[in-house]
Image (cartoon, rainbow, N blue to C red; front, side, top):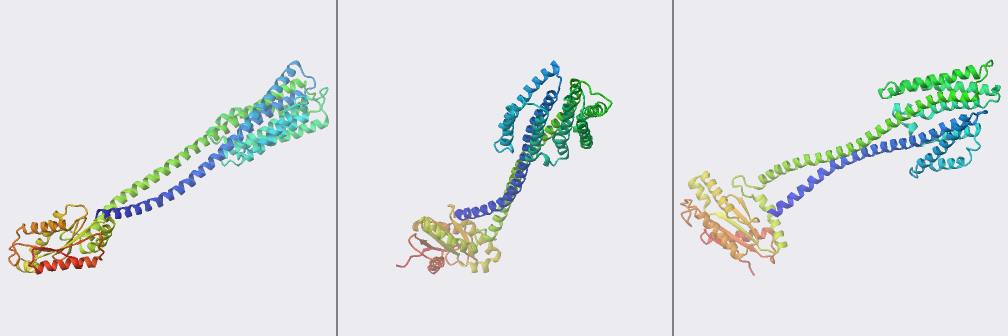
Length: 512
């Protein structure tokens, strides 16, 4: 019986595992998808940060090259400007070293890594010796082009956050272009011979001023968007200084460089004045890039947190499913076991019913065959039960059936023994691992225990008390019989016990 119940419990547990795994798989699929999306965002932001770091280093190099270009174009340098020129050359060399180190430390798959390193190698050898306006302007333009390419390769220009997108536009295009246009005015203005400007140079200044004014309008629009959020409040003061500085450059250009009646100041003074104002524009650039870095870092932290939340939420969801299903399984198992118990037991006696007997009889034969143990089947009947009912009434008859059932339950000492109510006053017992002598002794004990109850039965011709007759069959492991044959043999033994006078046990003898 325990083995059968254990098998059923195992089957029920398999169903529990199945109904638990299905929703868990659903949760795993959903949260894996969510996790992969978060990882995609993490990769996107990480690439943005990597690209921004490279662009920042490139732009620092550009700012110094622009300053170098302005100093190199001064026709009559002073001792101070000559000294500053040498210092700037050292800074540019260091910028390129840092840029090489920064790019070299990045992953081999970093976009444009090899191309950018190759470009730096190609210009590093001699450009400081032959530094002129055109050559340095070409280098600046090429480096700014690399910044633009990197922004595409590293997703910066694809940023979905409005603030970040606007700041990317500022640090990639608008501010660097303003600085470059102003830097070109500075370089050309300081390169004049005898402080005289050609018509071509003045036309060039006019073009640059138009570009500056156009970019200023775009920059004002971008900054207006940023000011809608409090996080960009730190940009207001540098913005005002930048506007004043850019106005100074425009005013200086219009008054001293484009005015035909005006004579340009000394080139060293021009350089000093324009550089001071350009530095204010660079300060705004630095604030923009610092805020962009902060924004990307915050988003990276949030994405990392979200990644952890997704994992934890997924685990909690799985544990919750297991917990709920566990509760359901335990309650359902208890309910099923109760329903099963009700369907396999006799309502009057609580013994197993005939339906369950038919179900487990074959299972016990299989267990007996596998374990090579003898199987005993005992069938018993209350003697003259019809007469007892006629004499004492059906109510007392029911009580007698309950008493006999209780005695049968009390007699079952081993876990594998089972007692059944086969119908009316007929009962059965199945025992595995019990031999002929043990089965006979066991049966007689049951018979005597029932008679010892001394339940009066005046119509019992075998005794003055209630008694039972019993038929026993022992199936040895080497004997093969069907359940119907075994039942028939036990019934024949019971019939023989009744024929011999009842209130006795008869063991079926196998025919040779």
